[in-house]
Length: 380
Image 1 (cartoon, rainbow, N blue to C red):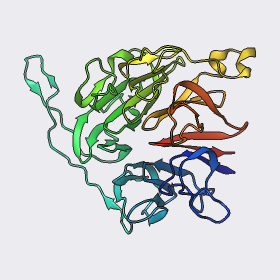
Image 2: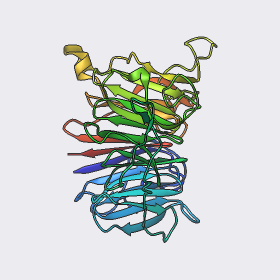
Image 3: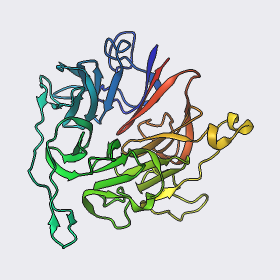
């Protein structure tokens, strides 16, 4: 049994809300978690969902569905079929990246009647020199053949792919080569203009535009190639997220860190001090450790750190969702489109984490953030 819940921006008919007449609701935001329709065979195969601002991409087996606004009106639908089963999706307003199980990478333009176009990654014989020999001579490092692609992510101004040989591509160019041995990519996420990467050792790297503090480095600026976030060095990170202009991470010790732009409370840190007019900083370039509020009653009779510790994190353009091990979802940030499942009377954002959803018992679930929306996939 599978159920899909949605809340947030739906003005372009990205999500089929009305199950009875199979029509799209496009009259405004959905301000509470509401069940949505999904493509056929969604119970037969695992479903992959990648939402962006004006459409949402669904992959079921070998079929790919894009629904939203493409050429002329909301609720348009584009359907294509890949040669083999689809492994991963990454969506931005201009196109959708499609990674197949055989490691091949394709791009689908966000236009009606578009077709899958295979992406050929460049294979420069030599990358930039990054090390020197004991005699001071530059040691040049080859990127090697792109081979099988294992991870993809994209934002409005960034497109990233990672090969099985740990080569980082700013599609289609080779950007950086990590060591091949004893080094593996665990997770890759992109914001609007930046990327963050988690490796198997729990280290976090970032690159791209960091002018809003989203890279986690002390100095604001552009980082051309992946750089280790020094503030998290020595802390084993287990999960990461990249929002529009902010980032987040969870450690193996159950700690939550956020950094970057906090203009709408998306870092879960107070924008205004309680009862006062003094405004807190809107940019935090270094990861900030959170003291999370108590979660649920189950923690009162057990070890609260174990029962309700942070488990997963995801981020939209200006909102952040935290999944705790007890099954409760917490959120902070911009809520004007209902993306946190709340409609506030006098405010357009939450500037601290609040509980917004309790997953049903005995269900597995996954939380996905779109730029201005949230989806929850439940399965039993």
